[in-house]
Image 1: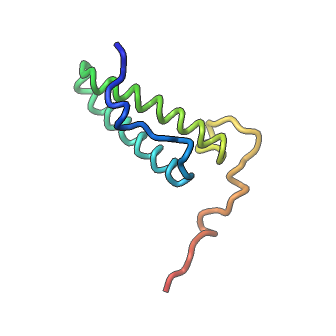
Image 2: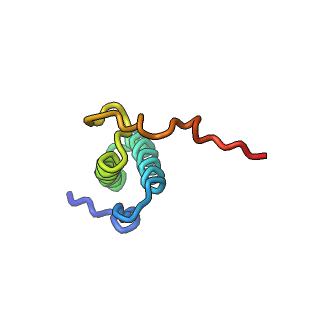
Length: 99
């Protein structure tokens, strides 16, 4: 079965996305994949849901690969030559006090 369902609605131009936009899209796709997986547990024959699940998993894999090549690993499971997250300030160093 060809999986062309909804391609235009979820297609994103990954080349023009900022780091923040990429992370948001990764989170959105991860959430949708988990929800579709839960739905498919009780509706395993739903072809549209199966199609969307395959489509989203491919998109999130491609997006995560691109993100990690540019910004460094998202998790410890990504192969890398050095620990790039050590080059950036830790989250608590970015805190701003607003009065």
